Image 1 (cartoon, chains in turn blue, orange):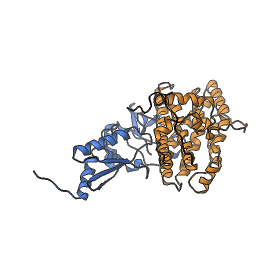
Image 2 (cartoon, rainbow over the protein chains, first blue to last red; image 1 turned 45 degrees about the vertical axis):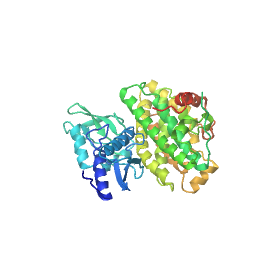
Image 3 (spheres, helix red, strand yellow; image 1 turned 180 degrees about the horizontal axis):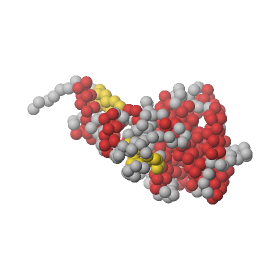
Image 4 (tube, chains in turn orange, blue; image 1 turned 90 degrees about the vertical axis):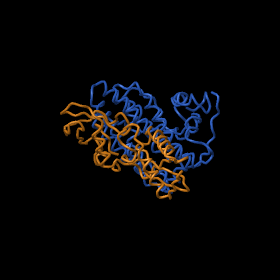
Length: 167
Length: 258
């Protein structure tokens, strides 16, 4: 039997790789690393501590994500890993990776626009349809199927679609 | 009801944080009452989404109040095991949903303030409050836009929707003064750079409200008599009924979990 011995740096990297495989339960094509929800993995005396940050204050997926990280680490032999939630700095859609944006679009969800327009009192966003690529779209509701999405409609292909709100 | 209420050691900071947590919880609960009842599906989802944001803010604030207090209380105990006189939310937020115009007028009055408040709070010398504010201000921007759009649509809509929106604004106006109330304990926190002086936000709040109400072809009441009491636990009759529903499980089956 071979027992591999890792130092903390290697352990940290392995633990990060494992935690990074956890998918967002609401948008399964995105991992928590793509989303920028996974902030930090630290190892101290062989004990793993993972820091995550919520997308929205009341996001119900956070409990699920916490559990999934613990389970994923447990499966890979990391016992009693701790997951803590950090609030600062506040999560922003700017942290979403390019890869994540592409995966979102392929999945049929329009990725977040560059931040800024959120401040306009009445909506002025221009969102491209993830189905047909048309820019001729309109908002149906600022609040969609999850906290992080709005419901839009394409006026060219007539399909409704989710838009990942910028935040 | 089988379980006693908790005691809270209300230092100025604990009280300050609890007041804001209660605001978020009570308004969030009111909005959640629309779930399954809103006029259209999109609105059902919108109101539940806003309720969820507020519930999230409440949880963070309650947890922080528990840390500051350090007496073994937690977010659940604060929410489920305080009676009506221990709640410190604004009277505005416990007012019943009424018709859709009333829910939206209440939301506009509060969101127009909360948006400014959380943005200002990001500069708090209290790192936790600043962090909670940084999350909340992003959410409140959407809440303000949502309620503003509805007030315009209702006010500048049919004769019926106009009349209802005007009645909602007239009736709720007397509850807006409390938003700017500050007691001695809060004054000290403001001077220490921990809390935000609401009075400094009033001009911008009024400007936002006036602009939305004006675009909605509605008018703000001239009446400046303002109702008070929520911050010191003197509530309207509505909060007790709300809490009896919100707390019924924990009061009936103490410590129940799932």
